Amino acid sequence: MAPANPVPYDSTPESAPIPSAGMQVGAAPPAVVRSGGPEPVSQEELNSWRRGFTPQAEIWNGRLAMLGLSVGLTVLLVARLTGHAN
Image 1: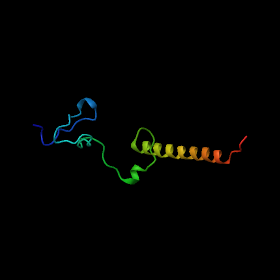
Image 2: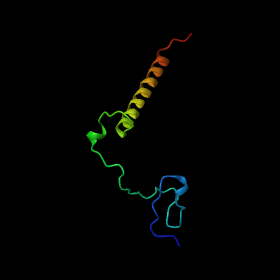
Image 3: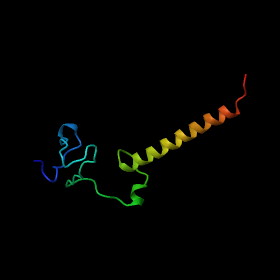
Image 4: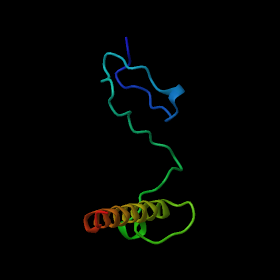
């Protein structure tokens, strides 16, 4: 018989629990609370401009990548629509 509450596990595939009768297949794993983990930050801190391997830098990296992709696609679309047929 499976335990009522599954044991929390790492995100590594080899430590993933085997689904039992009490668990839904494809369901999100239970939250793992670890001491010394990341602490929640405020919106001002999260949106601050930080360099290096920080969560703030990754957020800005994603935002700027989406901006660049959008500008690039817009330029291509406008060039196609205004281009002259040879």
